Amino acid sequence: MLGVAFLATVAYVLTVLPGRSVPVPTAAAPVPSPSPSLHGDGLSDSHDGYLIQAVTLPARRGKAVPVAFRIHGPDGTPQTEYELLQTKLLHLYLVRDDMSGYQHLHPELSGDTWTAKVDITDGGAYRFYAEFVPKGRDVAGHPTTLGLPFVIPGDTKVAPLPGPAPSAVAGRYVVNRLDGTAHLRVGRSGLLSFDVPGCGWSRISGRWRTCRRSRCARRRSPTCTRPPRS
Image 1 (cartoon, helix red, strand yellow):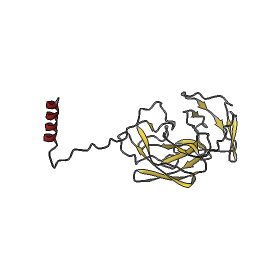
Image 2: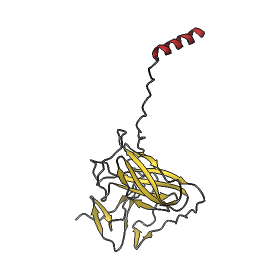
Image 3: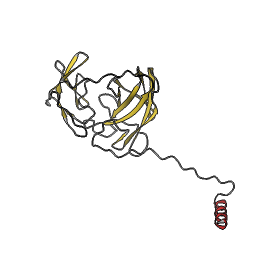
């Protein structure tokens, strides 16, 4: 045993000579995990070869709390080129687990990092949803949606979830589900059709939208019933 240890020591000394430094391996680029579904729903930090990586996440309540993140492409390098999606390069949504605290933000891209400021009024578990279309992809298709969760500690006033309803009020508009209160099933695509009385349809970046601000698709991969093309 002593002979083996001696030979190993000699081999090490001959390999790492005085004055030489041991090579330090470089950090591997972030690699997205395989996509479990065809369409991203924001419940994962990776999808379709793209990965969202937090730089700064909110850790306290307050106004204008900073948030920063990067999007990495399939080659592991930061994604810095995007197609316009509804007049913006990236849309960032914030919602708490009880569906309260909703905010729709438009971060700014500086170098390879997206930055924004959010208002956090209460504790609890939150999630950011980043929606974008990488450069060179068809904006009329499904955008890529990635998610980042974070928790604000302390006492939390949880908002009770309302029961299923065939209609809901959003500002001065009423949104009616044309299929009533039929349930969508987890893990399956489903058709969600609705109308908004008194609100005209318009096309933005090849997509139908209502009043230029209502969203057609929710996060569980349903599709939207649209007006016929003229």
